[in-house]
Length: 294
Ligand SMILES: Nc1ncnc2c1ncn2[C@@H]1O[C@H](COP(=O)(O)OP(=O)(O)OP(=O)(O)O)[C@@H](O)[C@H]1O
Ligand SMILES: [Mg+2]
Image 1 (cartoon, rainbow, N blue to C red):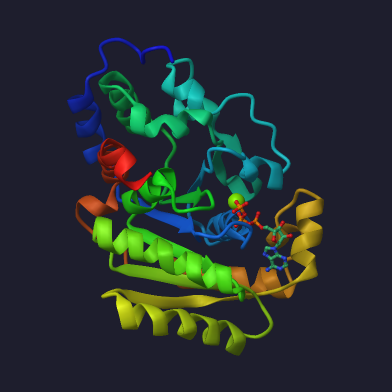
Image 2 (cartoon, rainbow, N blue to C red):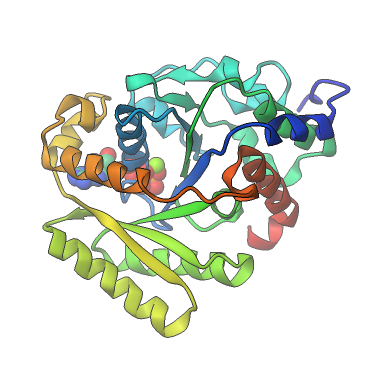
């Protein structure tokens, strides 16, 4: 990988970011794959936009660039080009529905743990120069509980865990929560149950997870809400559109819009955690811890 622009002043980058307004940074994770993280990220992102928020969605799934596929976008450039100094973050942003700003995934993120000092400065600089005015940064993570997912999750202020009614979804969510708690001190997690039959079913699933975490861990799980299984969502995926756009009155879309309203009312944590630079600092810190979680 080519070195980032010469003469990057990390300190001045950090100072520039410190002057910016708080940005709520939320990771969407699950442990198990295929439970609906990307669909929820995309549809929550668009729903936040509909509520008047300025939202960016970072596709942090290194292997599969899902967000752009779900939205039928065709990125020419991605984070790799930012890290190599060819492009700025602003130059790789794609415009999604309702003005959602999509930051396409890159294989560059895969190498987070191996970044040199110049490249770390490069990321800080890239985010510090990010001109887009945003209130919310959503981070759609990959499946699994490998280093990349952990790094992103622990760098965010809030972690949303998506579970569905499958034993492996619950055990993998538990494994992720345990790792984030035990090795990284995270103790608050928001739970969304997806592909459920009813709200009661969703709540019961949440309670099942709580039962295990209450028994073995010192963590707090908050029930954000449930999204029903809905063929409208599947149809939207096939059409490469967001369900909140294609079928705004479908059960899934209504549920997701409600979740967005609820999350929108979460109090923004003030202090360092409320800013983008905190995200980047933590990301780099995590990547230095690197392999221990990999
Ligand atoms: N509420 C729902 N109702 C019906 N189908 C759903 C729902 N949520 C997700 N799905 C189905 O599950 C598939 C996987 O969803 P998605 O790609 O969002 O999962 P993911 O957790 O991001 O997967 P990965 O771990 O591979 O990144 C979707 O393509 C869709 O077919
Ligand atoms: Mg995904």
